[in-house]
Amino acid sequence: MSQQFSLAIHGGAGTITRNLLTPAKEAAYLSGLSHAISAGKSILSAGGSALDAVETAVIALENNPLFNAGKGAVFNHQGGHEMDASIMDGSNLMAGAVTCVQSLKNPVQAARWVMERSEHVLLSGAGAEKFAMEHGAVAESNDYFYDQFRFEQWQEAVASNSIQLDHSEKKFGTVGAVAMDSAGNLAAATSTGGMTNKKWGRIGDTPVIGSGTYANNHTCAISCTGHGEFFLRAVVAYDISCLMEYKGLTLKQACDLVVMEKLVKMGGEGGLIAVDHQGHIELPFNSEGMYRGWANNSNEEVLIYK
Amino acid sequence: MSQQFSLAIHGGAGTITRNLLTPAKEAAYLSGLSHAISAGKSILSAGGSALDAVETAVIALENNPLFNAGKGAVFNHQGGHEMDASIMDGSNLMAGAVTCVQSLKNPVQAARWVMERSEHVLLSGAGAEKFAMEHGAVAESNDYFYDQFRFEQWQEAVASNSIQLDHSEKKFGTVGAVAMDSAGNLAAATSTGGMTNKKWGRIGDTPVIGSGTYANNHTCAISCTGHGEFFLRAVVAYDISCLMEYKGLTLKQACDLVVMEKLVKMGGEGGLIAVDHQGHIELPFNSEGMYRGWANNSNEEVLIYK
Picture 1: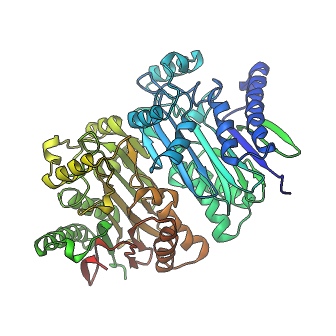
Picture 2: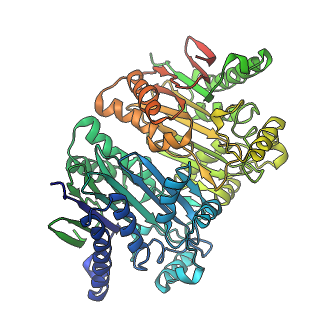
Picture 3: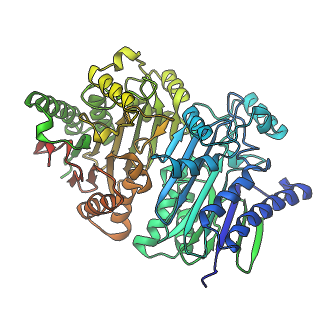
Protein backbone atom coordinates (compact mmCIF):
# COMPACT_ATOMS: atom_id res chain seq x y z
CA MET A 1 0.00 0.00 0.00
CA SER A 2 2.78 2.43 0.76
CA GLN A 3 3.86 2.28 -2.86
CA GLN A 4 0.37 2.84 -4.23
CA PHE A 5 -0.08 5.68 -6.69
CA SER A 6 -2.78 6.89 -9.07
CA LEU A 7 -2.66 9.15 -12.10
CA ALA A 8 -5.25 10.41 -14.57
CA ILE A 9 -5.01 12.81 -17.50
CA HIS A 10 -7.34 14.45 -19.99
CA GLY A 11 -6.85 16.11 -23.35
CA GLY A 12 -10.27 17.73 -23.64
CA ALA A 13 -13.91 16.70 -23.94
CA GLY A 14 -16.48 17.31 -26.66
CA THR A 15 -18.45 15.81 -29.52
CA ILE A 16 -15.69 13.33 -30.24
CA THR A 17 -17.09 10.41 -32.23
CA ARG A 18 -15.50 7.57 -34.17
CA ASN A 19 -16.58 8.95 -37.55
CA LEU A 20 -14.88 12.30 -36.87
CA LEU A 21 -11.46 10.74 -36.35
CA THR A 22 -9.49 8.86 -38.99
CA PRO A 23 -7.72 5.73 -37.73
CA ALA A 24 -4.42 7.60 -38.08
CA LYS A 25 -5.70 10.55 -36.03
CA GLU A 26 -7.12 8.23 -33.41
CA ALA A 27 -3.79 6.47 -33.13
CA ALA A 28 -1.99 9.81 -32.81
CA TYR A 29 -4.27 10.94 -29.96
CA LEU A 30 -3.91 7.64 -28.12
CA SER A 31 -0.15 7.83 -28.56
CA GLY A 32 -0.08 11.39 -27.19
CA LEU A 33 -2.12 10.34 -24.18
CA SER A 34 0.10 7.30 -23.58
CA HIS A 35 3.19 9.45 -23.76
CA ALA A 36 1.80 11.83 -21.12
CA ILE A 37 0.72 8.94 -18.89
CA SER A 38 4.20 7.44 -19.13
CA ALA A 39 5.83 10.76 -18.29
CA GLY A 40 3.75 11.16 -15.14
CA LYS A 41 3.89 7.49 -14.18
CA SER A 42 7.67 7.33 -14.32
CA ILE A 43 7.81 9.98 -11.61
CA LEU A 44 5.20 8.32 -9.41
CA SER A 45 6.61 4.81 -9.72
CA ALA A 46 10.01 6.14 -8.65
CA GLY A 47 8.42 7.56 -5.50
CA GLY A 48 8.22 11.12 -6.84
CA SER A 49 5.59 13.66 -5.88
CA ALA A 50 2.07 14.05 -7.24
CA LEU A 51 2.96 17.69 -7.93
CA ASP A 52 5.90 16.75 -10.15
CA ALA A 53 3.81 14.08 -11.87
CA VAL A 54 0.91 16.34 -12.82
CA GLU A 55 3.23 19.11 -13.99
CA THR A 56 5.24 16.67 -16.11
CA ALA A 57 2.15 15.03 -17.63
CA VAL A 58 0.64 18.42 -18.50
CA ILE A 59 3.92 19.62 -20.05
CA ALA A 60 3.88 16.52 -22.29
CA LEU A 61 0.36 17.44 -23.43
CA GLU A 62 1.25 21.16 -23.83
CA ASN A 63 4.14 20.15 -26.11
CA ASN A 64 1.86 18.02 -28.30
CA PRO A 65 0.19 20.11 -31.06
CA LEU A 66 -2.85 17.78 -31.09
CA PHE A 67 -4.06 19.31 -27.85
CA ASN A 68 -5.33 22.87 -27.28
CA ALA A 69 -2.66 23.98 -24.79
CA GLY A 70 0.89 25.24 -25.25
CA LYS A 71 1.93 24.22 -28.78
CA GLY A 72 -1.42 23.66 -30.45
CA ALA A 73 -3.27 26.45 -28.62
CA VAL A 74 -6.12 27.86 -30.72
CA PHE A 75 -6.04 31.31 -32.29
CA ASN A 76 -7.86 34.17 -30.58
CA HIS A 77 -9.74 36.94 -32.40
CA GLN A 78 -6.53 38.90 -32.99
CA GLY A 79 -4.74 35.93 -34.52
CA GLY A 80 -2.60 35.37 -31.45
CA HIS A 81 -2.74 32.88 -28.61
CA GLU A 82 -3.93 33.41 -25.05
CA MET A 83 -3.17 30.57 -22.71
CA ASP A 84 -4.19 29.81 -19.13
CA ALA A 85 -2.90 27.25 -16.63
CA SER A 86 -3.17 26.39 -12.96
CA ILE A 87 -1.77 23.93 -10.44
CA MET A 88 -2.65 23.05 -6.85
CA ASP A 89 -0.86 21.11 -4.12
CA GLY A 90 -3.33 19.13 -2.02
CA SER A 91 -0.88 18.73 0.86
CA ASN A 92 -0.90 22.42 1.81
CA LEU A 93 -3.63 23.97 -0.36
CA MET A 94 -1.03 26.12 -2.12
CA ALA A 95 -1.95 27.07 -5.66
CA GLY A 96 -0.64 29.01 -8.64
CA ALA A 97 -2.08 30.09 -11.97
CA VAL A 98 -1.45 32.27 -15.00
CA THR A 99 -4.00 33.70 -17.42
CA CYS A 100 -3.79 35.37 -20.84
CA VAL A 101 -0.12 34.53 -21.41
CA GLN A 102 0.88 34.66 -25.06
CA SER A 103 4.39 33.33 -25.52
CA LEU A 104 5.24 30.89 -22.73
CA LYS A 105 6.09 27.43 -24.02
CA ASN A 106 4.76 25.77 -20.88
CA PRO A 107 2.15 27.79 -19.00
CA VAL A 108 1.76 25.09 -16.32
CA GLN A 109 5.41 25.56 -15.37
CA ALA A 110 4.77 29.29 -14.90
CA ALA A 111 1.74 28.43 -12.77
CA ARG A 112 3.93 26.30 -10.53
CA TRP A 113 6.45 29.12 -10.17
CA VAL A 114 3.65 31.52 -9.21
CA MET A 115 2.73 29.02 -6.48
CA GLU A 116 6.27 28.42 -5.23
CA ARG A 117 8.14 31.64 -5.96
CA SER A 118 5.60 34.44 -5.46
CA GLU A 119 3.20 35.56 -2.76
CA HIS A 120 0.40 35.35 -5.30
CA VAL A 121 -2.00 32.79 -6.69
CA LEU A 122 -3.03 34.28 -10.04
CA LEU A 123 -0.95 36.44 -12.40
CA SER A 124 -2.14 37.73 -15.76
CA GLY A 125 -1.02 38.87 -19.18
CA ALA A 126 2.26 40.67 -19.80
CA GLY A 127 2.91 40.82 -16.04
CA ALA A 128 2.65 37.04 -15.72
CA GLU A 129 5.01 36.60 -18.68
CA LYS A 130 7.52 39.01 -17.15
CA PHE A 131 7.38 37.11 -13.86
CA ALA A 132 7.87 33.78 -15.64
CA MET A 133 10.76 35.09 -17.74
CA GLU A 134 12.50 36.39 -14.63
CA HIS A 135 12.34 32.83 -13.31
CA GLY A 136 13.77 31.28 -16.48
CA ALA A 137 10.69 30.47 -18.53
CA VAL A 138 11.14 29.59 -22.19
CA ALA A 139 9.31 31.97 -24.51
CA GLU A 140 8.43 30.95 -28.03
CA SER A 141 7.59 33.05 -31.07
CA ASN A 142 4.29 32.84 -32.92
CA ASP A 143 5.95 30.36 -35.29
CA TYR A 144 6.21 27.78 -32.54
CA PHE A 145 2.49 28.00 -31.76
CA TYR A 146 1.48 28.01 -35.44
CA ASP A 147 -0.55 24.98 -36.47
CA GLN A 148 -2.16 24.71 -39.90
CA PHE A 149 -5.33 23.10 -38.57
CA ARG A 150 -5.74 25.69 -35.81
CA PHE A 151 -5.18 28.46 -38.35
CA GLU A 152 -7.87 27.14 -40.68
CA GLN A 153 -10.19 26.65 -37.70
CA TRP A 154 -9.66 30.33 -36.79
CA GLN A 155 -10.19 31.52 -40.38
CA GLU A 156 -13.50 29.65 -40.47
CA ALA A 157 -14.56 31.25 -37.20
CA VAL A 158 -13.56 34.72 -38.42
CA ALA A 159 -15.51 34.19 -41.66
CA SER A 160 -18.64 33.23 -39.73
CA ASN A 161 -17.96 35.80 -36.98
CA SER A 162 -18.43 33.06 -34.42
CA ILE A 163 -16.63 32.20 -31.25
CA GLN A 164 -15.95 28.51 -31.39
CA LEU A 165 -15.93 26.76 -28.12
CA ASP A 166 -13.05 24.45 -27.69
CA HIS A 167 -15.40 21.57 -26.95
CA SER A 168 -17.69 22.01 -29.95
CA GLU A 169 -14.91 21.84 -32.53
CA LYS A 170 -13.63 19.08 -34.74
CA LYS A 171 -10.49 19.32 -32.69
CA PHE A 172 -10.78 19.61 -28.97
CA GLY A 173 -8.57 20.76 -26.19
CA THR A 174 -7.69 21.75 -22.67
CA VAL A 175 -5.41 19.32 -20.91
CA GLY A 176 -5.00 18.31 -17.31
CA ALA A 177 -3.66 15.80 -14.83
CA VAL A 178 -4.45 14.66 -11.29
CA ALA A 179 -2.41 12.33 -9.12
CA MET A 180 -1.98 10.69 -5.73
CA ASP A 181 1.61 9.82 -4.94
CA SER A 182 2.96 7.03 -2.74
CA ALA A 183 3.09 9.42 0.24
CA GLY A 184 -0.65 10.03 -0.13
CA ASN A 185 -0.31 13.57 -1.42
CA LEU A 186 -2.71 14.82 -4.09
CA ALA A 187 -2.16 17.37 -6.85
CA ALA A 188 -4.00 18.72 -9.90
CA ALA A 189 -3.00 20.81 -12.93
CA THR A 190 -4.86 22.16 -15.98
CA SER A 191 -3.75 24.07 -19.10
CA THR A 192 -5.62 25.48 -22.09
CA GLY A 193 -5.52 27.67 -25.18
CA GLY A 194 -9.16 28.63 -24.66
CA MET A 195 -11.73 29.23 -27.39
CA THR A 196 -11.06 29.77 -31.09
CA ASN A 197 -11.62 33.41 -32.13
CA LYS A 198 -12.28 34.46 -28.53
CA LYS A 199 -12.49 38.19 -27.93
CA TRP A 200 -12.44 40.61 -25.04
CA GLY A 201 -9.77 38.80 -23.04
CA ARG A 202 -12.21 36.04 -22.11
CA ILE A 203 -11.04 33.83 -19.25
CA GLY A 204 -12.56 30.39 -18.65
CA ASP A 205 -12.38 28.02 -15.70
CA THR A 206 -8.87 26.67 -16.32
CA PRO A 207 -6.89 29.25 -14.30
CA VAL A 208 -9.51 29.48 -11.55
CA ILE A 209 -8.77 27.52 -8.37
CA GLY A 210 -12.00 25.86 -7.26
CA SER A 211 -13.56 25.83 -10.72
CA GLY A 212 -11.12 24.25 -13.21
CA THR A 213 -8.58 22.90 -10.73
CA TYR A 214 -8.61 21.86 -7.08
CA ALA A 215 -6.65 19.54 -4.82
CA ASN A 216 -6.97 18.71 -1.13
CA ASN A 217 -5.34 15.69 0.54
CA HIS A 218 -8.45 15.18 2.67
CA THR A 219 -10.79 14.79 -0.30
CA CYS A 220 -9.68 14.72 -3.94
CA ALA A 221 -7.79 16.28 -6.84
CA ILE A 222 -9.80 17.52 -9.83
CA SER A 223 -9.01 18.90 -13.32
CA CYS A 224 -11.89 20.02 -15.56
CA THR A 225 -12.46 20.45 -19.29
CA GLY A 226 -15.50 21.71 -21.16
CA HIS A 227 -17.62 24.84 -21.58
CA GLY A 228 -15.76 26.98 -19.06
CA GLU A 229 -18.51 29.48 -18.25
CA PHE A 230 -20.68 26.74 -16.74
CA PHE A 231 -17.76 25.33 -14.78
CA LEU A 232 -17.12 28.81 -13.33
CA ARG A 233 -20.72 29.37 -12.30
CA ALA A 234 -20.94 25.89 -10.76
CA VAL A 235 -17.52 26.10 -9.03
CA VAL A 236 -17.18 22.52 -10.24
CA ALA A 237 -13.86 21.31 -8.83
CA TYR A 238 -14.47 22.55 -5.29
CA ASP A 239 -18.08 21.36 -5.42
CA ILE A 240 -16.88 17.77 -5.73
CA SER A 241 -14.50 18.24 -2.81
CA CYS A 242 -17.30 19.75 -0.67
CA LEU A 243 -19.74 16.97 -1.53
CA MET A 244 -17.17 14.48 -0.23
CA GLU A 245 -16.13 16.45 2.84
CA TYR A 246 -19.45 17.87 3.99
CA LYS A 247 -22.00 15.38 2.64
CA GLY A 248 -19.96 12.19 2.88
CA LEU A 249 -20.36 11.20 -0.77
CA THR A 250 -17.82 8.92 -2.43
CA LEU A 251 -15.74 10.34 -5.26
CA LYS A 252 -17.92 8.48 -7.76
CA GLN A 253 -21.17 9.74 -6.25
CA ALA A 254 -19.89 13.32 -6.19
CA CYS A 255 -18.63 13.13 -9.79
CA ASP A 256 -21.90 11.65 -11.05
CA LEU A 257 -23.96 14.29 -9.28
CA VAL A 258 -21.91 17.25 -10.50
CA VAL A 259 -21.07 16.15 -14.06
CA MET A 260 -24.07 14.03 -15.01
CA GLU A 261 -26.80 15.92 -13.13
CA LYS A 262 -25.94 19.46 -12.06
CA LEU A 263 -23.91 20.43 -15.14
CA VAL A 264 -26.34 18.71 -17.52
CA LYS A 265 -29.24 20.62 -15.95
CA MET A 266 -27.38 23.92 -16.47
CA GLY A 267 -26.42 23.00 -20.05
CA GLY A 268 -22.72 22.74 -19.28
CA GLU A 269 -20.99 20.25 -21.56
CA GLY A 270 -17.71 18.70 -20.53
CA GLY A 271 -16.02 16.41 -18.07
CA LEU A 272 -13.28 16.08 -15.52
CA ILE A 273 -10.69 13.75 -14.10
CA ALA A 274 -10.56 12.98 -10.41
CA VAL A 275 -8.54 11.01 -7.90
CA ASP A 276 -9.45 10.71 -4.23
CA HIS A 277 -7.31 10.35 -1.12
CA GLN A 278 -7.54 6.56 -1.35
CA GLY A 279 -6.37 6.51 -4.94
CA HIS A 280 -9.74 5.88 -6.59
CA ILE A 281 -9.94 7.32 -10.10
CA GLU A 282 -13.01 8.73 -11.87
CA LEU A 283 -13.18 10.13 -15.43
CA PRO A 284 -16.78 11.37 -15.85
CA PHE A 285 -17.99 13.37 -18.88
CA ASN A 286 -21.40 14.30 -20.27
CA SER A 287 -20.15 14.90 -23.83
CA GLU A 288 -19.69 12.38 -26.65
CA GLY A 289 -16.13 11.72 -25.74
CA MET A 290 -13.13 12.80 -23.71
CA TYR A 291 -9.48 12.20 -24.47
CA ARG A 292 -8.35 10.57 -21.26
CA GLY A 293 -6.08 8.09 -19.60
CA TRP A 294 -5.24 6.68 -16.20
CA ALA A 295 -2.65 4.54 -14.54
CA ASN A 296 -1.82 3.04 -11.18
CA ASN A 297 0.75 0.53 -9.96
CA SER A 298 -0.73 -2.34 -11.93
CA ASN A 299 -2.84 -0.98 -14.77
CA GLU A 300 -2.87 1.66 -17.46
CA GLU A 301 -5.42 2.68 -20.08
CA VAL A 302 -6.01 5.44 -22.64
CA LEU A 303 -9.49 6.14 -24.02
CA ILE A 304 -11.36 8.51 -26.33
CA TYR A 305 -15.01 7.50 -26.78
CA LYS A 306 -17.79 6.63 -24.35
CA MET B 1 -43.05 38.75 5.34
CA SER B 2 -43.54 39.29 1.62
CA GLN B 3 -42.03 42.75 1.95
CA GLN B 4 -38.98 41.58 3.90
CA PHE B 5 -35.60 42.55 2.54
CA SER B 6 -32.00 42.47 3.77
CA LEU B 7 -28.92 44.36 2.65
CA ALA B 8 -25.29 44.41 3.79
CA ILE B 9 -22.25 46.26 2.48
CA HIS B 10 -18.55 46.39 3.20
CA GLY B 11 -15.82 48.88 2.39
CA GLY B 12 -12.84 46.67 3.23
CA ALA B 13 -11.32 44.98 6.26
CA GLY B 14 -7.95 45.39 7.95
CA THR B 15 -6.08 46.76 10.92
CA ILE B 16 -8.60 49.54 11.36
CA THR B 17 -8.41 50.88 14.91
CA ARG B 18 -9.78 53.97 16.59
CA ASN B 19 -6.37 55.62 16.98
CA LEU B 20 -5.69 55.35 13.23
CA LEU B 21 -8.75 57.37 12.26
CA THR B 22 -9.35 61.00 13.15
CA PRO B 23 -12.92 61.82 14.20
CA ALA B 24 -13.38 63.60 10.87
CA LYS B 25 -12.16 60.58 8.90
CA GLU B 26 -14.33 58.25 10.92
CA ALA B 27 -17.35 60.45 10.22
CA ALA B 28 -16.51 60.50 6.52
CA TYR B 29 -16.34 56.71 6.34
CA LEU B 30 -19.59 56.28 8.24
CA SER B 31 -21.22 58.81 5.96
CA GLY B 32 -19.96 56.96 2.86
CA LEU B 33 -21.29 53.68 4.19
CA SER B 34 -24.65 55.25 5.07
CA HIS B 35 -24.93 56.73 1.61
CA ALA B 36 -24.33 53.32 0.00
CA ILE B 37 -26.82 51.64 2.36
CA SER B 38 -29.44 54.25 1.49
CA ALA B 39 -28.84 53.80 -2.23
CA GLY B 40 -29.37 50.04 -2.02
CA LYS B 41 -32.18 50.24 0.50
CA SER B 42 -34.22 52.67 -1.61
CA ILE B 43 -34.34 50.03 -4.34
CA LEU B 44 -35.25 47.17 -2.02
CA SER B 45 -37.91 49.07 -0.08
CA ALA B 46 -39.59 49.96 -3.39
CA GLY B 47 -39.77 46.27 -4.26
CA GLY B 48 -36.73 46.34 -6.56
CA SER B 49 -34.36 43.43 -7.16
CA ALA B 50 -31.43 42.30 -5.05
CA LEU B 51 -29.34 42.51 -8.22
CA ASP B 52 -30.14 46.20 -8.74
CA ALA B 53 -29.60 46.89 -5.05
CA VAL B 54 -26.11 45.35 -4.84
CA GLU B 55 -25.01 47.00 -8.08
CA THR B 56 -26.29 50.39 -6.92
CA ALA B 57 -24.70 50.10 -3.48
CA VAL B 58 -21.35 49.08 -4.98
CA ILE B 59 -21.47 51.94 -7.49
CA ALA B 60 -21.96 54.35 -4.57
CA LEU B 61 -18.84 52.92 -2.92
CA GLU B 62 -16.86 52.90 -6.21
CA ASN B 63 -17.66 56.60 -6.64
CA ASN B 64 -16.39 57.43 -3.15
CA PRO B 65 -12.61 58.07 -3.12
CA LEU B 66 -12.34 56.83 0.48
CA PHE B 67 -12.71 53.25 -0.70
CA ASN B 68 -10.26 51.21 -2.81
CA ALA B 69 -12.50 50.62 -5.84
CA GLY B 70 -13.37 52.81 -8.82
CA LYS B 71 -12.44 56.38 -7.85
CA GLY B 72 -9.98 55.79 -5.04
CA ALA B 73 -8.41 52.65 -6.49
CA VAL B 74 -4.80 52.22 -5.40
CA PHE B 75 -1.83 52.66 -7.74
CA ASN B 76 -0.19 49.60 -9.26
CA HIS B 77 3.56 49.25 -9.84
CA GLN B 78 3.36 51.14 -13.13
CA GLY B 79 1.53 54.08 -11.55
CA GLY B 80 -1.77 53.12 -13.12
CA HIS B 81 -4.88 51.44 -11.76
CA GLU B 82 -6.05 47.86 -12.27
CA MET B 83 -9.55 47.21 -11.06
CA ASP B 84 -11.59 44.01 -10.69
CA ALA B 85 -15.29 43.47 -10.07
CA SER B 86 -17.86 40.68 -10.10
CA ILE B 87 -21.57 40.16 -9.62
CA MET B 88 -23.78 37.08 -9.24
CA ASP B 89 -27.52 36.51 -9.44
CA GLY B 90 -28.63 33.87 -6.94
CA SER B 91 -31.90 33.20 -8.75
CA ASN B 92 -30.26 31.60 -11.80
CA LEU B 93 -26.57 31.30 -10.86
CA MET B 94 -25.63 33.68 -13.67
CA ALA B 95 -22.46 35.64 -13.03
CA GLY B 96 -20.24 38.26 -14.62
CA ALA B 97 -16.82 39.71 -13.82
CA VAL B 98 -14.05 41.90 -15.18
CA THR B 99 -10.40 41.91 -14.20
CA CYS B 100 -7.47 44.28 -14.81
CA VAL B 101 -9.60 47.09 -16.23
CA GLN B 102 -7.88 50.47 -16.09
CA SER B 103 -10.27 53.21 -17.07
CA LEU B 104 -13.86 52.16 -16.34
CA LYS B 105 -15.60 54.46 -13.90
CA ASN B 106 -17.76 51.64 -12.53
CA PRO B 107 -16.27 48.17 -12.97
CA VAL B 108 -19.26 46.51 -11.27
CA GLN B 109 -21.52 47.83 -14.03
CA ALA B 110 -19.24 46.23 -16.62
CA ALA B 111 -19.39 42.98 -14.65
CA ARG B 112 -23.18 43.06 -14.82
CA TRP B 113 -23.06 43.63 -18.58
CA VAL B 114 -20.71 40.66 -18.97
CA MET B 115 -23.34 38.60 -17.13
CA GLU B 116 -26.34 39.87 -19.06
CA ARG B 117 -24.99 40.79 -22.49
CA SER B 118 -22.24 38.25 -23.24
CA GLU B 119 -21.91 34.48 -23.28
CA HIS B 120 -19.02 34.82 -20.87
CA VAL B 121 -18.41 35.07 -17.15
CA LEU B 122 -14.98 36.69 -16.92
CA LEU B 123 -13.39 39.22 -19.29
CA SER B 124 -9.98 40.79 -18.79
CA GLY B 125 -7.87 43.83 -19.55
CA ALA B 126 -8.19 45.82 -22.75
CA GLY B 127 -10.69 43.30 -24.12
CA ALA B 128 -12.99 43.77 -21.14
CA GLU B 129 -12.75 47.56 -21.52
CA LYS B 130 -13.57 47.32 -25.22
CA PHE B 131 -16.60 45.15 -24.45
CA ALA B 132 -17.78 47.59 -21.77
CA MET B 133 -17.30 50.63 -24.01
CA GLU B 134 -19.32 48.97 -26.77
CA HIS B 135 -22.13 48.69 -24.24
CA GLY B 136 -21.94 52.32 -23.17
CA ALA B 137 -19.55 52.26 -20.23
CA VAL B 138 -18.12 55.55 -19.00
CA ALA B 139 -14.33 55.68 -19.19
CA GLU B 140 -12.37 58.08 -17.06
CA SER B 141 -8.85 59.45 -17.49
CA ASN B 142 -6.11 58.95 -14.92
CA ASP B 143 -7.04 62.34 -13.47
CA TYR B 144 -10.38 60.97 -12.29
CA PHE B 145 -8.73 58.12 -10.41
CA TYR B 146 -5.98 60.35 -8.97
CA ASP B 147 -6.07 60.64 -5.20
CA GLN B 148 -3.32 62.37 -3.25
CA PHE B 149 -3.38 59.82 -0.42
CA ARG B 150 -3.26 56.86 -2.80
CA PHE B 151 -0.39 58.51 -4.69
CA GLU B 152 1.66 58.99 -1.51
CA GLN B 153 0.84 55.44 -0.44
CA TRP B 154 2.19 54.20 -3.79
CA GLN B 155 5.33 56.36 -3.56
CA GLU B 156 6.05 54.90 -0.12
CA ALA B 157 5.62 51.38 -1.49
CA VAL B 158 7.88 52.09 -4.45
CA ALA B 159 10.54 53.54 -2.13
CA SER B 160 10.52 50.43 0.03
CA ASN B 161 10.02 48.12 -2.99
CA SER B 162 7.11 46.52 -1.18
CA ILE B 163 3.74 45.35 -2.35
CA GLN B 164 1.25 46.72 0.11
CA LEU B 165 -1.77 44.63 0.70
CA ASP B 166 -4.95 46.55 0.63
CA HIS B 167 -5.86 45.28 4.08
CA SER B 168 -2.59 46.11 5.80
CA GLU B 169 -2.61 49.80 4.90
CA LYS B 170 -3.62 52.89 6.80
CA LYS B 171 -6.36 53.15 4.23
CA PHE B 172 -8.24 50.06 3.30
CA GLY B 173 -10.45 48.98 0.48
CA THR B 174 -12.41 46.54 -1.59
CA VAL B 175 -16.12 47.11 -1.50
CA GLY B 176 -19.09 44.83 -1.79
CA ALA B 177 -22.79 44.32 -1.23
CA VAL B 178 -25.17 41.40 -0.69
CA ALA B 179 -28.93 41.48 -0.62
CA MET B 180 -32.16 39.52 -0.40
CA ASP B 181 -35.10 41.25 -2.06
CA SER B 182 -38.79 41.02 -1.23
CA ALA B 183 -39.21 38.24 -3.81
CA GLY B 184 -36.61 36.15 -1.97
CA ASN B 185 -33.91 36.51 -4.60
CA LEU B 186 -30.29 36.84 -3.51
CA ALA B 187 -27.42 38.70 -5.18
CA ALA B 188 -23.81 39.63 -4.42
CA ALA B 189 -21.29 42.07 -5.92
CA THR B 190 -17.68 42.99 -5.14
CA SER B 191 -15.27 45.60 -6.56
CA THR B 192 -11.64 46.46 -5.83
CA GLY B 193 -8.55 48.37 -6.88
CA GLY B 194 -6.33 45.58 -5.56
CA MET B 195 -2.96 46.00 -3.87
CA THR B 196 -0.79 49.13 -3.84
CA ASN B 197 2.29 48.74 -6.06
CA LYS B 198 1.13 45.32 -7.30
CA LYS B 199 3.12 43.87 -10.18
CA TRP B 200 2.79 41.11 -12.72
CA GLY B 201 -0.91 41.58 -13.39
CA ARG B 202 -1.80 40.07 -10.01
CA ILE B 203 -5.46 39.09 -9.67
CA GLY B 204 -7.04 38.53 -6.26
CA ASP B 205 -10.31 36.91 -5.23
CA THR B 206 -12.63 39.81 -6.14
CA PRO B 207 -13.36 38.83 -9.78
CA VAL B 208 -13.46 35.10 -9.00
CA ILE B 209 -16.92 33.57 -8.67
CA GLY B 210 -16.84 31.15 -5.73
CA SER B 211 -13.96 32.91 -3.97
CA GLY B 212 -14.70 36.64 -3.65
CA THR B 213 -18.36 36.57 -4.69
CA TYR B 214 -21.14 33.98 -4.71
CA ALA B 215 -24.94 33.97 -4.62
CA ASN B 216 -27.47 31.14 -4.64
CA ASN B 217 -31.13 31.53 -3.67
CA HIS B 218 -31.02 28.15 -1.92
CA THR B 219 -28.23 29.13 0.45
CA CYS B 220 -26.69 32.60 0.69
CA ALA B 221 -25.04 35.60 -0.97
CA ILE B 222 -21.44 36.42 -0.03
CA SER B 223 -18.97 39.24 -0.77
CA CYS B 224 -15.43 38.99 0.61
CA THR B 225 -12.63 41.40 1.47
CA GLY B 226 -9.14 40.73 2.72
CA HIS B 227 -5.89 39.06 1.70
CA GLY B 228 -7.10 37.72 -1.64
CA GLU B 229 -4.64 34.90 -2.08
CA PHE B 230 -6.00 33.08 0.96
CA PHE B 231 -9.59 33.64 -0.14
CA LEU B 232 -8.72 32.11 -3.54
CA ARG B 233 -7.06 29.02 -2.05
CA ALA B 234 -9.93 28.51 0.40
CA VAL B 235 -12.69 29.19 -2.20
CA VAL B 236 -14.27 31.15 0.64
CA ALA B 237 -17.61 32.34 -0.76
CA TYR B 238 -18.66 28.96 -2.16
CA ASP B 239 -17.36 27.18 0.94
CA ILE B 240 -19.95 28.98 3.06
CA SER B 241 -22.68 28.04 0.60
CA CYS B 242 -21.57 24.37 0.63
CA LEU B 243 -21.40 24.22 4.43
CA MET B 244 -25.03 25.34 4.50
CA GLU B 245 -26.25 23.15 1.65
CA TYR B 246 -24.31 19.96 2.29
CA LYS B 247 -23.62 20.06 6.02
CA GLY B 248 -26.75 21.82 7.20
CA LEU B 249 -24.95 24.63 9.04
CA THR B 250 -26.68 27.94 9.66
CA LEU B 251 -25.25 31.03 7.97
CA LYS B 252 -23.70 32.09 11.29
CA GLN B 253 -22.11 28.69 11.91
CA ALA B 254 -20.70 28.58 8.38
CA CYS B 255 -19.34 32.14 8.60
CA ASP B 256 -17.72 31.49 11.98
CA LEU B 257 -16.09 28.27 10.76
CA VAL B 258 -14.71 29.77 7.55
CA VAL B 259 -13.69 33.26 8.70
CA MET B 260 -12.76 32.70 12.35
CA GLU B 261 -11.30 29.18 12.10
CA LYS B 262 -10.29 28.05 8.60
CA LEU B 263 -8.96 31.40 7.36
CA VAL B 264 -7.27 32.18 10.68
CA LYS B 265 -5.51 28.80 10.58
CA MET B 266 -4.22 29.53 7.07
CA GLY B 267 -3.16 33.06 8.01
CA GLY B 268 -5.76 34.74 5.84
CA GLU B 269 -6.80 38.10 7.24
CA GLY B 270 -10.11 39.64 6.23
CA GLY B 271 -13.83 39.29 6.41
CA LEU B 272 -17.04 39.05 4.45
CA ILE B 273 -20.67 40.05 4.38
CA ALA B 274 -23.39 37.46 4.05
CA VAL B 275 -27.15 37.20 3.78
CA ASP B 276 -29.03 33.90 3.69
CA HIS B 277 -32.26 32.86 1.98
CA GLN B 278 -34.24 33.79 5.09
CA GLY B 279 -32.76 37.26 5.26
CA HIS B 280 -30.34 36.67 8.14
CA ILE B 281 -27.29 38.91 7.95
CA GLU B 282 -23.74 38.12 9.12
CA LEU B 283 -20.70 40.42 8.95
CA PRO B 284 -17.77 38.31 10.24
CA PHE B 285 -14.13 39.45 10.12
CA ASN B 286 -10.91 38.27 11.75
CA SER B 287 -9.09 41.62 11.36
CA GLU B 288 -9.15 44.62 13.66
CA GLY B 289 -12.01 46.21 11.84
CA MET B 290 -14.19 46.18 8.75
CA TYR B 291 -16.06 49.09 7.22
CA ARG B 292 -19.55 47.67 7.07
CA GLY B 293 -23.23 48.33 7.23
CA TRP B 294 -26.56 46.55 7.04
CA ALA B 295 -30.22 47.30 6.74
CA ASN B 296 -33.56 45.56 6.63
CA ASN B 297 -37.17 46.75 6.77
CA SER B 298 -36.91 48.03 10.30
CA ASN B 299 -33.27 48.65 11.16
CA GLU B 300 -30.06 50.10 9.77
CA GLU B 301 -26.52 50.35 11.11
CA VAL B 302 -23.04 51.33 9.94
CA LEU B 303 -19.93 50.14 11.79
CA ILE B 304 -16.15 50.25 11.60
CA TYR B 305 -14.52 48.65 14.65
CA LYS B 306 -15.00 45.32 16.40
